[in-house]
Length: 387
Image (cartoon, rainbow, N blue to C red):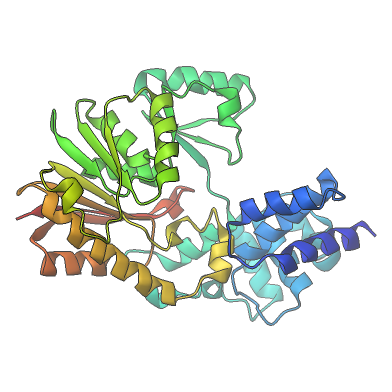
């Protein structure tokens, strides 16, 4: 039977994956090594494994095939053989809303508890609405792009001509179906950047002035720097990261975006960097801090499944140490923008409390950016002023 074939492919993937690398990278390598798997096998194995991880640890005592069928039912609006075979009483509800389907699962499986999907409830930031947040895990977030305002309608029209539904979220943001091959459809990236909607929202805290000198200290591939530059094009930039390969990616991204004037340094912010930065004084620092990434697990549900709670404390300590080492290069009266893509209070509110207690900083504004209400990532951002 085909369902047995599909299930065998899923089990092979699951048994060989341990969460050590991102799932999409593992699947690319695994399928390359197992070329006997046809395109249909790869497609169904990918759908099943992502759906399975989205269920988290809910109904953990049920057989694996039952949990897979429930997960696939909740996460998709097209039928699969697993759902047809294992949940025949539910198959006609496959196009219902997620909330309606959750009610049906609860009816047929009374032990089901939505909170078991995300079993770190005690760690959540206070502003998170638990039920809405947990429910969001059954929907793949959209692909968002930030677009120059005078180009948005033109780009939207071009995408729709290619059969891609593009929803204008604001004057500078478009939402696209996840998996859209944007770089093939619109290779010229001078007028747009791929950036999650919540990440775009952090720009509201920047408030740069003309000719300011800003430091994006954990720049990675440069998304926040490009956002800052879009807010105030005259800003002078220093970008740094501990990973040299990230800065190579940043250079390529900046080049595609037409951003040419900036400085870059490879810096380990856990070390004393006075030799490199002794004469620097910044009008603003963006600290997009290393974190658990828990606000992005809707995109990477394997992290939801494999995450170990002790990592929260590790990242909290790391965030405080980095902040302490960078704030001394900030001018008085100027902002430190603290950002995480985490939903954990120990990385968010509690770090901010530590910053204003231990460092010469005062809090001007802080917020949880609730992407789960917008099919986007969830983030935390705070603007602190140096005293």
